[in-house]
Amino acid sequence: MLHLAAFDKRIKAAVAQVPLVEGWANAQRLMRPDVFAEFLEALAQDRAQRYTEGVGASVPVVAPEGEPSALPTPESFEWFTHTGETIAPNWRNEVSLESMEAFLQYNPAASIHLISPTPLLLIVAGSDTLTPTDLAVAAYERALEPKALVIMDGKHFDAYTEPGLSQSAPPAIEWFEQHLMWPQRARAGEAVS
Image 1 (cartoon, one colour):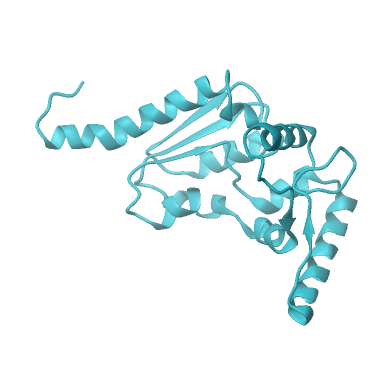
Image 2 (spheres, rainbow, N blue to C red):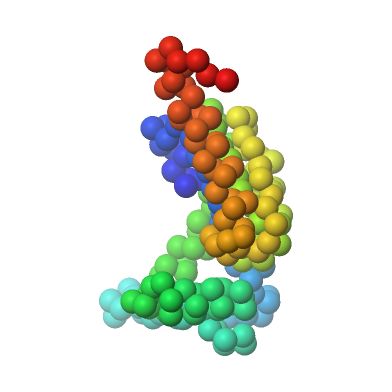
């Protein structure tokens, strides 16, 4: 959403909830330095294999603690395992290394200042270790007005289910109502408060 809002001015209001703002920095937070170095080597080998053989490798999205995965946090393992069993039985626990390489290159924080004058709301979880809170707050500080920041209680996935959803959804709804509905009512001559 952040990248699109920076470059597509058809977007009239933006909300980013527990956003990934910089893939490289995020990955460095999720992996020890030695594991990160091994990960970069695996990506290079996969890139060469895709070039020479036309096929790449995949890794699990989540795995038990200590096993390699794209999202190596206990919280991620619990969320995706539970969600796969209860809500998304067709979900496959795999992601291509090519996608992981693209993840490292993803950096919407680099262009966050270009979102303005589109109104931007960031909803950040105060104890987020998957998309670290401080990285999102630092990106928010580089954004230009109009902007707002909501720091909700909890971890990353708490934004998607109760009781955290009751903290993350209302500010988003209010933001869209303020920046999408109010201008339409004002143009129509309705009284707005």
